[in-house]
Length: 282
Image 1 (cartoon, rainbow, N blue to C red):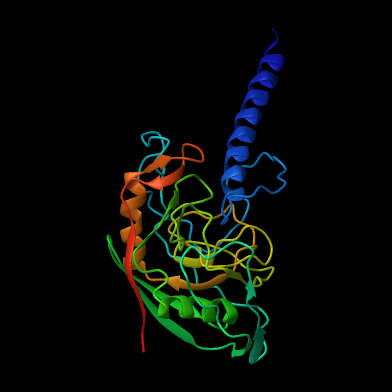
Image 2 (image 1 turned 45 degrees about the vertical axis):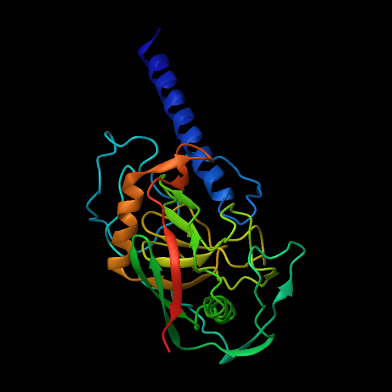
């Protein structure tokens, strides 16, 4: 075998491994929804992340990639992402509509009233959980209809005594997913509402966003990005942030790993995260 042929074979094997890893990352992203529905995916060979967000280039890894088991993150970025901001602001008020879903609610709750809502201002929400208090800031300038729904669910104690059912620890998708009282990943509040996304939306450490099962299917499930989210495209409504001390609590959960369900890096957190109560600041 010539040297050139040998190098070509090595390059082909490397490309195959990269493609297989990307296929796994895309499979995980397909499952970032409330019903685990699939979407079409094109496998591409990448070097590094394919979506860039401002987490900085000097992050200290939480663990060595060579030492980490598959069900634990190889590393977690430590720099917080910039808070999302729309390049073009929304109108001062937007119209919100909440449609009844075909599926029954996982926990009985009333949908918010349809109508106009202000697209400005922030709201503070505290999640008292089994790992400590998580402090959220909801931004109505980003997603006013989503914020209205989330605050309504908090007020009706929808999130109380529920578990965060999903944790992902792989490269390109490091999130903790919560908001389903059934704990199955398919439960919702019995209503849905439209996406509030925009082309320049990026995700990173500390971003709070809605899970969905396709366009305009938002309900109650949300995810917190604690690390790398370079694999996400702007199809999940970002509606706020979580502060750094809170993210560090989630880091510990991630470092403990997952019990695999949807692949070795996607499943139930080994360290349970239970939302005991959710409350909004008056």
